[in-house]
Image 1 (spheres, one colour):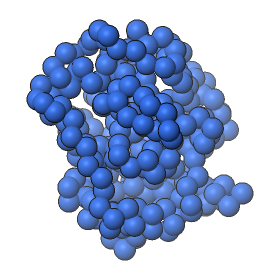
Image 2 (tube, helix red, strand yellow; image 1 turned 45 degrees about the vertical axis):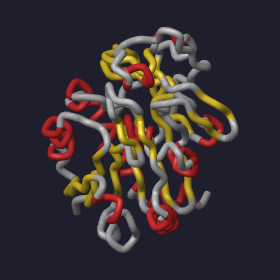
Image 3 (cartoon, rainbow, N blue to C red; image 1 turned 120 degrees about the vertical axis):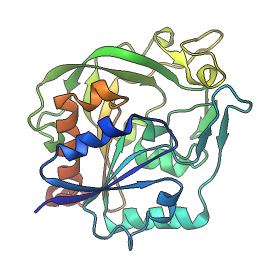
Length: 269
């Protein structure tokens, strides 16, 4: 029987046809699409009951206004949304977050806890620590290494593989996550990255007068939240990643794992 998967997008531009082709390629998946802001009214246990997993490729709570002032406008989720999201976690729904989804709901710290980190488009606070805007670097060719070869998400993935994709420099809550993939790119030297805040103000690929604390080389992990298994994969910026066989395998494996009995048993272990 095919897995029913809900794909959530919105808040960030992307090439739709190549992205959705990922899910068309999965013979074991029947997928459906919801986009923000409508998706915010859809994410509750009752409406999502039929889905085995939810894929997030969105940035809720962020209005990106490149070359405008202010460049980034943030909003809090409604109390209803927060309650529905907590109920989804309580229901045990499997959730998979991809790439820029790590930037969602930047004024809601609980969301960062669920994902295991947060990408900042503008300076912000996370658990009492002030952070500058996060870093990005397009078209980085990096060697991805499997940290946990026994994890089901890594099934069929080589011990290391090369991919050209966007890399992020941002705070990761490493103590709360279980690593599954890391990168050989240098995340400790912020000069390897460009300022997201400057990019939003029209200065693309610039790090003038910008600095950032040392980052982590983790690019995928899993974690537990209430009754839900959570997976985050930082890869997936554009078509070069969308068509990569290892990336597609990771996404398919993540869908299978978060909706599996094995993941439920892991939650309760």
